[in-house]
Length: 424
Image (cartoon, rainbow, N blue to C red; front, top):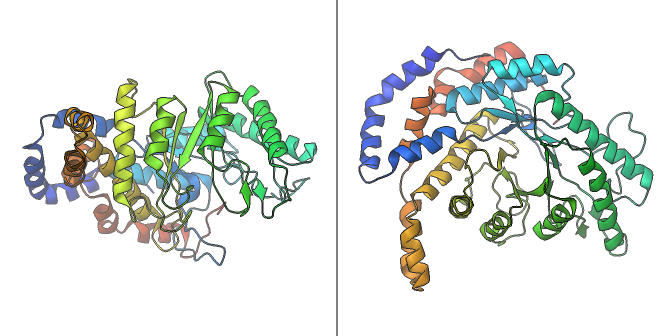
């Protein structure tokens, strides 16, 4: 399904006066509104192919209607999202959940919808049909070299798929770890992982990157072989310039200062990018910004300051992607909400008076520093985001258009009321 441009235009026209009033109120106090709008127009967040269907938990999955039944339909859904918000121009595939059997036609379809392919993601945390050896006790860290070789071969295969699609990065997340003390030799497990990653690294094309993700627990609960940012950073340093650390916001213990981690990785040139989500207890994979939007703002404050210090391009020099599970919401609405939350935090970070904050910090003026940050955070930047979308041909209110046009109902008519998304 594709949206007609006039449908969005008609909706926008009905709300343009209200938007203009709010927009003019916000920009009246901004000296750099044009610069902010330009940066917003360039800023895009990749949509993962596995997020277009209803998610689930260990206990069950309650599929909704009109879910995509193929990779082509997943790409079409990302096209819908991008048509609405003009900030989701790429899709990230998870292999083998979404194998591009006809890469040329897949690329053509994506291009017709204004999309390209972001990082490709490997999967050695599940056994696949017909797989010779099991990953029950790990993959790249496994004590059996044959299992490690199988996992390496899969990652190299994923790279080949990515090359066919025009991707430039491989994202690696491992469930490797242990559930009980004594089960695993930590040092040997880490060494095995490094050696396996070195083989994968050697297979990277010259213009590719490998992004190493970390997670402190789950599915293993005693140890995880790449359990925190320090272990990921260590591996990335040992591998070389084409390796960096990927930060998933849910992959941290409660109370962890993620913004400090981000700042240091960025300072060292080893921040690959993000998997955005939100959490209350652990790796909950909730809608971005739904639980702790202030933390998201603080992370972006460090990102904007750190990227500007290094002369980096906000839109392209690191990877931005959502990684969430939409268990009880319409997946497209949830993704639209997540992208909106990310853009809100980014825009608020652009409003921080960096010069005034530096003076406050140098004077140890703690109260003033807090006031400067919260002045930016408490600014309603939604009119700026709506204006950037409007100028790009998107919707002033993406979810409003989605509901007004009954898009989910149309998808149900096309695909059925209880379809099952592949790979979930």
